[in-house]
Image (cartoon, rainbow, N blue to C red):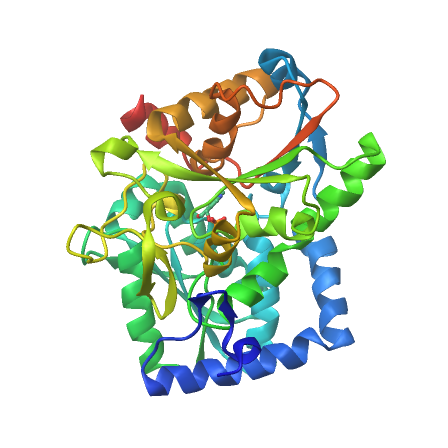
Length: 393
Ligand SMILES: Cc1ncc(COP(=O)(O)O)c(C=O)c1O
C-alpha cells in the first residue's frame, strides 16, 4: 500500500473500516488533496481565520505566573480568545469549507466538552447547513452551557446513553448515523484522530497555532522557546502547537494527558503513557487496554480529554522519541484552573488546565530565567466553572 495515500504515520494511522465507508473516505481524501493544493481554498481559509475566528490569537506574557513559578518566562498562546472560545474553530472552518466544496447539506459531529460541538454548530450556521451533534449524556450534564449554545445556534443535540455516555460512545453512534446518510452529510471530526484523511486534515487546519507562536516568540524574545506545552485529548491542539516546531530539536514538545483519579487507580486517559497499539474508530494508534487486550474505558473530569485513543501522529512522535509525556490528575487540573484564574485573570478550560498543571509540578525543569516556555491555552473555562464548584471542589 502507498503510505502517503493511506495516511499512515509510522506503524499508526491508516483506515480500518468496512468497504462502503472506506470508499467515502477515499473520495474525501482525494478531494482534500485537491483543495489543499488550491490557492483559492487556502485564501478563503486565511480570510475566515482572520475575519471570522479573529486570528492571529495573542501570545501573552504571563508575568505573575512567571513570578510565582520563579524560573523561565511563561507565555500563553491565547486560543481561548478565538471566536467560540477554543482552538476548535480553526478545524471547523477548514472542514466546513471542505464540506461545502463536496456539496454537502448537513454536518454531523461528536463532542465531549461541547467546544467542538459549539464550533461545528457555529460553522453550520455560517454555511447555512443543518447540524446534528452527538453527545454522551454524562457530558451533557457536565457541560450544560455548551449544550444551550449549540441549541441556540440551531443544531440538534442528540443525547447518547450507550456505554458510559461519554466521547467514545458519542463517536460510535455518530459514525453509525453518518454511514446511513453519507450522501447528504459530512462527518466533521473534532480532533486529529479517526481514519485517513482526518488526522492529516485536522493537523493541517490547526498548525496555524504553532506557526503563529514561532513568529510571535521570535519577534518578542528573538529566540525559540525551551518548551511548548499542550494538553492532549485526541491531540488536535497539541499538534496545532507542536507541528511547526517538530524540526527544531532543541524545542521540547510536552504532551500532557489526563491522569484522572491517579494513574495507579486505572481511572485515567493516559493513552500515550500506558496504551498499546490497537485499532479504534477506524484507525490504529496507542489505545488504553485492559489485561485481556480489550479497549479499556477512559476517565477524566475534563470531558474533552476523556477518550481511550489518541492521534496516530502523536503516537508516532512518541515512538520516535520526539515527545515528552506529562500527566495531570483531575485535582491538579482544578488547582491549576483556579491558580491561573487568580494569578492572571484568565480562566482556562479544565482540559487546558492539565497543561498549566504540568508547570506547577516539581520537575526541576524550566528554572532558567533566560529561557522561555509557551503553554497552548486551548480554550476558556466558562463552560467548566459550574461543574468545578458543584462537583469537583
Ligand atoms: C478547550 C479544549 N482543549 C483541549 C481539548 C482536547 O482536544 P484535543 O486534544 O483534540 O485538542 C478540548 C476538547 O474538547 C477542548 O475543548
